[in-house]
Structures are given as C-alpha cells and as structure tokens.
Length: 345
Image (cartoon, rainbow, N blue to C red; front, side):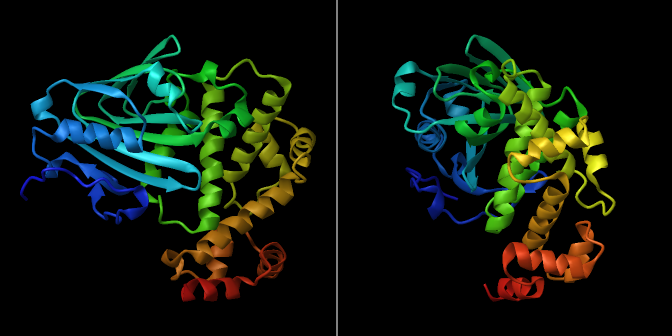
C-alpha cells in the first residue's frame, strides 16, 4: 500500500466497522492507523486524531521516526469506548488544555498489555496488564506508555460514578482490578466490551451500560479507592452489591430473596428496604432483569436458532405461561410478536 500524505479526519459515525480479529475480540471502528501514513508524518497525524477523539494533550514519542499507533472507537449508550495501541511516548495534559474542556467525563483506563504510568492528583500509579485506574480529564496529568502498550479507555459520565460512590477526586490515579477475585472478573469483563460495541440492540445496550457502571463502582469500592462513605454512599454500595448478586445468578431458576441477600452479605429485610426506594423488591427485580435479558435475546438475530422457550428457560423461567404473561405486562407485546418484529428490521 502506498503511503498517504495525510489521513482524512472522520467523525466516529462516518467510519465503517472493521471486522477483523485482534487478539481475542473483534475491533471497534478504526479511525486511524499509522500503517497508511509516511513515517515522517505518523506521529503528528496520530497526535491530531488522538486530541480530537480522546482528549487534548501534549506528547513526545520515544523515537519519532519509528512511531506507530492505531486508534479504535465505539460507543455503548453514553459510555464512549476507545482502544489504542502505540509506541513508547510521554503524554501530558496541561492546565490550559483542561480549561478548554467542554465535557464532564471520567476515564476508566484498563491496560491490556505493556505498562502505563500515570501521575495525577498527587498520586503515581503504574498499570500492568489487567489493571485499571481512574483518570480525570479535568485535572492536569502526565503519563508514560511503554513498548507494546495497549490501552482500553471507557469514557463515563462523572455524575454516574459520583451518584454511586460520592466525590471522584479521592479515587483518581489509584490502581485497582487485580486485588480480589471480583476485581479480576470485572477486569476480564471489561476486556470483552469491544467485541459487542455497536452490535447490540437498544435494550441490551441499556442493560450493559448500567452493568458496566455498577461493576466499576463495586471494584473501586472493594479497592477502598472511594472517599469515606457517607450514609447515602454506603447505601449505594450495598444496593450495587444486591444488584450484582442478582445479575450473577439470573439463570438459576431457584434464585430467591434469601440467596440474593446471603450473597450480598445483608439481610433480606435490608435488601428489600434498599430496593424499595426505587419501587422494587428482590423478587420483582429478579423478574424484571430476567425479562430484560429475554427481550435482548429475542431481538438479537444471533439467537434465531433458539426457541422462545429455550431463551426463557435459559434465563431462569420454569413456567412458560408466567413468562409470557409477565413479558406482555412489561413490554406490551407477546414474546412471539417481539421475535417476529425483530426479524422484519
């Protein structure tokens, strides 16, 4: 392929999906690769694209003439997803660049390979494969990327995380992700997200978006990165634990209030009291979440080979009459009608 004199800048929505495998998952939308740019121009073009699509910054490559990088992007509802691979370099975001910021997001960084050192808010952390950290684009920072660095970034609305855990500042630039079995599971779960970005229907996307936020919040809480819990924050963490306990066991037809409460480490009474603030109970939430999962499966053409009963049974329903009636009440449509409509789209 001949070198290009300049890569054409394109918005995320204008780039076609690239369906090639990278490691264990399908890449998102590739918006830039230095493979098609002349070596002398690679770093400068990469920098302009990275500033536009990730965050404005200054950077210095370890070896400009040998620099290479790829950037892939996607979105999951209001959560932006960016995956990039690059040669060694140093990145700095200055106070002047922070002052020009127009959005209020936090970055959850997962290091896929290589290492990434981050210095922000008076904290210095080195991320290695599988580790995560929270970065605040509204504060200056410096970062150093190693050789063979691959990083996955989730751009999350600040208000979502702070609603769960309180002020975000105490959580900035601290490593989490590998200290407990749950954190390891969350880290592995986040690594799979690029494989489904922009391949989901709206209901499934909504469900997954909420799960990502809950799992990140729980991982941060486990790491002790959150600020000292206020009463509302403590209740929020307990509520997240109840919801996570339900999500992890939805396919079990014997799931009940006692199993959920025991898994969350609280009493059934307290768990139901927490959920009551949202007009729910343990059993009503189990039913609602199972119905949401069934709806997502019925609308997903990859599941066309499964019968409606297969899907319902797979998500813990044992009574098809109860399933059909509950589905109609929640979604105002029968499961069979839902599947028929999905095939017409």
